[in-house]
Length: 282
Length: 335
Ligand SMILES: Cc1cc2nc3c(=O)[nH]c(=O)nc-3n(C[C@H](O)[C@H](O)[C@H](O)COP(=O)(O)OP(=O)(O)OC[C@H]3O[C@@H](n4cnc5c(N)ncnc54)[C@H](O)[C@@H]3O)c2cc1C
Ligand code: SF4
Ligand code: SF4
Ligand code: FES
Image (cartoon, rainbow over all chains, first blue to last red; front, side, top):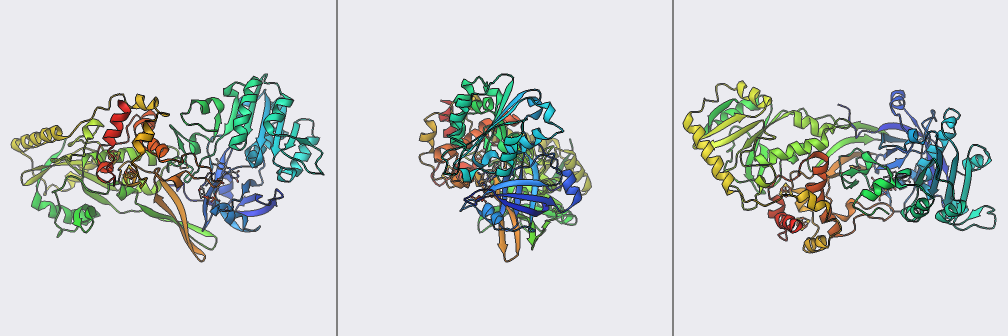
């Protein structure tokens, strides 16, 4: 009987510090065992449990794209009181940790085909959206999607993550990028303003379009109204939920909301599904 | 249906025979009251009880268990238990609870191997109830003093004997294994059993739960939860002693480079259950947690599995330090 709680061994190949506060790091992982690599088939929007022996496990969204065949990436925020995230941030390249998954559902990429795709992200919740953008921009898949528009915001320029990639995307024709910060500094020449305001200003068309939106609860709360105003119906607004987790496989009960377990029935949900829950989500 | 009569004093023989292949668990009165314990042929099997404190889920889903160990950077998962076990004396309500736990721990996509192996290797002999407690309400939630669901064998006390009735193939095979121990029951034995059963059924108090799920669907935001939860201390005893509560957490313990990952039962009645690293907590108040516990058992599981995850054992009532009574809570909801 396969043991679903038992992690697969991986090596940390590369660590990238993503922000000025140095509390966001991207871990590039490689499976130590070939079969494990083969059996780890994931889709954009899914997450995995990162396991640091001695500290425990944390659910983290997969930040690389399924078409990145050579590696697996996760971007992790370190919380000062967080046991696992602190332990992870203390590790160095070459260290070994565990991964189990992939878990949860994924962004409905099939439904996005032949449609305009709007991506709205805030803060470090941009990780699985980055996976999706990388996937869509891949030459193998780009033709399946119409216009791709990205609005991404962070508190300050130093807090924007994946900076080299953002720059690369800004230079490409197949994607329209709007990067914004809440407050700029003297070197910042880009856009300033909160994500919902920028969204209203750009006013992307909702025609034949679906929006994927991830961010802190407060951003989500203030983004829904402008999206509805733009004509996105609740079933075409797709987001990803976060709940404290332990097992990741629908057993421990921790992530339960109504009849749903975020770890197996989510984390990806439409705004329509969220409205139907009794609990207020954001 | 295979039936067999065994003299109470001959239970020792059965225990001795079972011991050759596995472990026989039955009830012993110890310093902490009655509990399921490993029995030897010389132990006195207790039959004189209404129910015991810790539900039988503990046999399959222990309070805590190690699921893997690690040293340096390598991890090893713990081998599954291969112990063959006969569990004797479980009450029918508790036997039913195991079928509910199965729905959680055993499913197509992910099966909990620790739970599963113990379930597969165990045989459940339930003992029909003669003296329901004041806190029992099994017949209102699909269980009953002589309910067979979840049992491999259902045993009845008939005077100085026990009447065993196989309720599953596993139970039939077990009884067939010990032809020398079981006698064929007579008509008088069956009659005595029937009388006991209907007397016990009549003694169970009932509550009216009709429409409970629909009511719960409509009262998520009701002020009722505040009222109901006022007395609750949030101690979690109701969930630890409930035979169907199955929430847990996985934690690491480490000394130097050696350590282990442990699965520990947890409770939705604790604020830490849902507390996230950022400090955000979707269920901050006692009121929300009480609502979650009731909603989960009487609404969400009904919508997901068509079963109320309560077997009416009354443990949450008798163990609550402030005498919260789930029957009153449910009555408030229905009102
Ligand atoms: C589907 C999903 C995807 C996520 N993706 C990312 C990501 O890409 N990057 C990132 O930095 N963070 C992500 N998180 C949040 C991340 O899981 C928590 O920040 C992290 O578990 C905190 O762990 P800790 O041990 O440092 O904190 P502690 O407070 O010590 O928490 C102890 C344990 O509680 C659980 N836990 C605590 N907070 C959370 C939480 N917010 N969500 C889930 N479990 C929690 C974990 O099992 C954790 O090990 C995601 C959460 C979910 C549910
Ligand atoms: S046992 Fe009683 S006091 Fe303790 S959490 Fe349950 S209802 Fe509250
Ligand atoms: S909720 Fe209470 S009465 Fe129902 S099964 Fe659990 S402990 Fe027993
Ligand atoms: S994390 Fe355990 S049920 Fe979802």
